[in-house]
Image: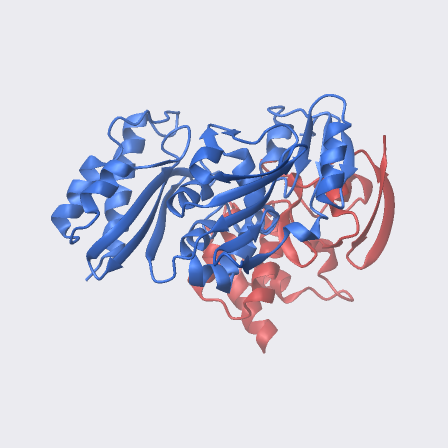
Length: 156
Length: 285
């Protein structure tokens, strides 16, 4: 039996009927066709599925779509404005914050959560904030640099 | 991984939640932040026929000092809210010290204290803290309201004193303003659950200890107070020798968990090492 939900994703309103067992990440990817949000471990560990729900980073593989009824969601697709990359996206490009790119959308969304709470984080604070996001390529060093780049750019 | 199918209902009040529980065919479960229950459902470790979403019940979301002088925390309060609370930092910082190291940023934004306690995962971080803090857990169910001491509430692995249909509504922690506390944890590197977590709460003047409470989670199937280690330090002056004696006294006779990541022997070893480090940190200088 479908349950009706209303959500705002990247500023656009959607109404849909969803199976209650559908996870938010599958709703975003398979129903709304927003495939920037990735399914990684599917066990709330790796953070590849991170999105911003009502202003806070959450793991969309561990949320039911029905729990997001009435919520405002921001995914990686919502960051770019008028063809211009968000400073965090730009930071990942400029500082080579990715190799395979699989973890990148989740890293970016968690970094977004951090920078809105703490616009000028120390290296230790960046590493602490990214504890719930796994990268198997970069060794994290350039990801930290990417977030530092974005912090500097956003506060200038 | 999808959970098995279930009937999804939303409750706007505690009474409505309980009545939805009573009218369910088969097993109903309450859904708070979902960060214990949804993973369990995805793995088919839980397969409720009805999920009752209690997150809209705003009256279960608060942190305040009550008329009894205790800090009261509504069961839907998230780990992130507990970690950031000035009230908790002042009266019961141990709870915030545990909340700060639960999972990661994303998990702390969704997971709730009520959900975590109701699940009673052996690797959770609140159990040791609520035992050391001698918290009282208030539950409401079809037969009314009960107040349960944390030590009686946490029964065994994934087992609590909750009766069918009961919801945790409040966690009350006496004020420990002026006490020292710490929570140290050996993380599982992937899940970030506690392989070993030790909570210490001490009423001390410098290194003169009047009272001390030491509790572990992660080590065994359920969190517990280590009274043997407490007794070594209670009423004494903490020295390096006393810390070593307390660590030696800790975890004796405990039936420790063993898995492919950490054997029982390793868990107990780490438990003693972490107790020593925690005490050194607390009584430094």
